[in-house]
Image (cartoon, rainbow, N blue to C red; front, side, top):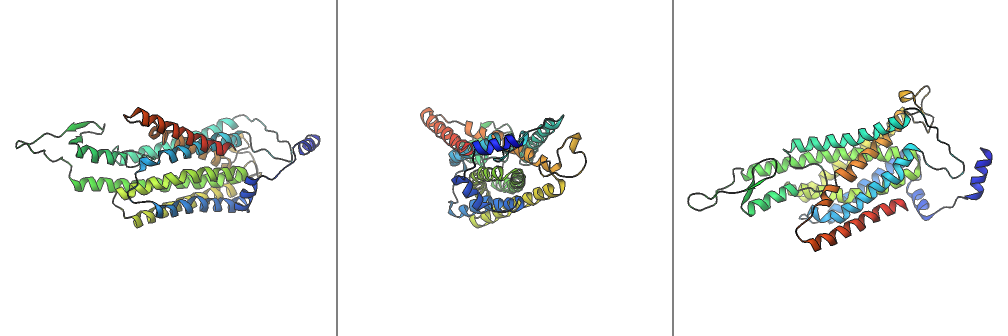
Length: 353
């Protein structure tokens, strides 16, 4: 072991890159301090950017930024989180061996699936609460916009399947008013706005868990996860801001509501720190005695795979359907698709670099 360590140090001398210097400057403290700093970085600037957003911004115009965020999230999950979960982070001054234990990889896979299913349940619950009006994704406001366009073109939705039916003209030739009154529409849209705030708060808790679990895994994993979440938060916050404006919030009230939901990230970070400090982890030695399911894993080791599962859901199921939407203009859609793929590869490339 000593010979292997000496050979690694001599053949691979450690050098300080520009990114490592930046990360060391931004995250100079312990894992707990760095996680709190990362939460501040991902919550502060995106919320302040809302002051520059026009109230009438269209969430669908954010598709390129969303594609960039998807590349960053999937890149962080596939290049950093999953290798760290199953193999661990490379150490520059010594050789690292991984012991394969019975049930350990299985238990880590279960934690990834639990994270994925948790967001499925949250999204499904929001869809049920809004009467099938859409879940918590980046295509905010599409259902509401389609309803407005349908009324303008003389058609209306007749059921939860989204089928359209032309309004029947009255006997005097005047188009009959829709059965749903404007007051009911405003109430349902307002309710969707408040439910979206609840979902946003829950989502931010997961971001906080990701910050804490990543920094306790390694400084590099924590820094790259912070970058991925930061890129994701910008279109996420702008999309939620646009939905709140559509729901009747003033710009000031919408910004205040988004600030409150940002506190969810701080709550998640504190929960993650508590789990890591008191639940232990295999990397830090953890608690005495056997771990979970007869393995060396502790409760603190479950946070990183859990957040990896939520990242997989947000980066695929929640967002990809919006990127798959196309219009009738084939040339325009082809150019937009190429731009989206370029943005996605750029986000993944940053994580790879």
